[in-house]
Image 1 (cartoon, rainbow, N blue to C red):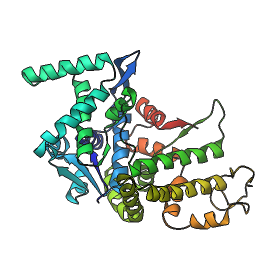
Image 2 (image 1 turned 45 degrees about the vertical axis):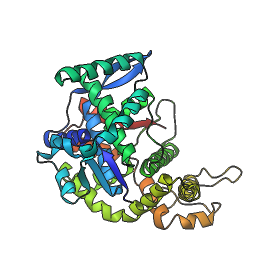
Image 3 (image 1 turned 180 degrees about the vertical axis):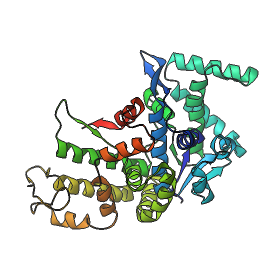
Image 4 (image 1 turned 90 degrees about the vertical axis):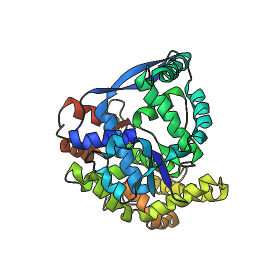
Length: 365
């Protein structure tokens, strides 16, 4: 089974605009729930564009294919988008989900029931439905695009049994409204694991002072692409080239995904144990160790050198195969030089937009 993902044309449209027009210095609006009602909170549009780009680059390298709704691909495909190269190679693929749209209706409506977590959301959505029925226009455009459109994409994901990478504004709404996507996405599990381990390394290196405890935390794959790129026009080409470098990890993720889809507990545990092995290796390398078995630090080549008290078998396992690949991503960089380089590529160094981008990808350790 191909390890495919359903993605939003909305995301590809924002990414295309980012490449062609540069960073948008206006605000976007995220929908948040506050005191049992929904409100619109301004967020940096450039940060939303960048998050969409980073999600797309990760999927481009580590998914077999990215499926987009054929009916709405015109939002980006008619322009001179760098994404067209990925479409020509079949990695981004248009799919006629709506050719049998009746299959999507009932799941979409049930999903909408779960998304309408407040009375204000239910009323606003009803106004959109009534308005659309009368004149093919909606009263609350952003809410319609975020919730109604998001529910439709979730229905596609459910019916066609594919994971879903939502547009960042949809992702925020899902979290804010209490709607959760299914847990069985192998790539999401691994990228979350990588982010956690990268933060663990940063915390060990730089400490966790109550005032100075914020660290840039870029996703591992976009970080690697930024390192190798000399211009923004190379991002998609580099991602496509990296597919060869990460072919074994992509195959591993496919098998992990199949185990999750089949709910094969034995196989799932096998893949989780490999991640646990990497986590133990990281702990040893940064001097955390297991309880009752302290690990000493030694100077050496690279950031750290493994001390002899560590588990030698686990150390050896982490020098090869998928474990070695994951470790290279974890210990590759703390992300700070790369985010500054990325901002510089868009000529936003020392600007308010550049500040918002850096803040967006800064986490508390």
